[in-house]
Figure (tube, rainbow, N blue to C red):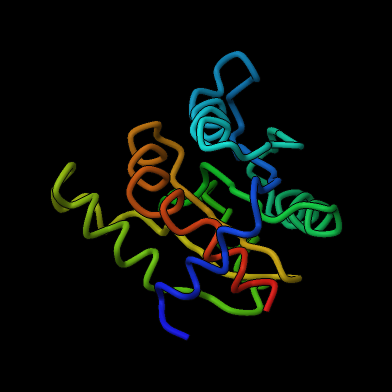
Amino acid sequence: MGVKDHREAAKGLGPLKGAVITVSDTRSAVEDESGRLIRELLEKEGHRVVAQKIVKNDIQLIRETVQDLLLQAIDFVITTGGTGIGKRDLTIEAVSPLLEKALPGFGELFRALSYAEVGSAAFLSRALLGTAAGKVVVSLPGSPQAVRLALDRLLLPELRHLVWGARG
């Protein structure tokens, strides 16, 4: 089967269910623009966000939250925030050990697309995608611009295909 065949098979999945985690020490639900944007973009495509949380930049808390969500009847988990290079940016360190398969092409493509928008600062992003427990796990930067770029250009066009592949 080729990519076209995979995408065609994945269409049969219908609407997907997922969770959104915002990683931040400062944001509240009212200020969570990126989490809200992820939800809006997913729902616009017919998918459902069945859990949405804000967690502090604490490696154990982030990891436990993702692990708990992976036990739920969902297809994907998307985190936003905590992917930079600061001391408190711990999402990648929390999520990476959970991944059974990493898909480095996502981060590479995301940074290439980001370069067109923000220039050389694009390489500071540690955006990540992989699979765990038969589900898709994505970690995005916290800026709304980065979220929109990742969802519009990369994730939404391939989300069903990713989930179909993760289910194996």
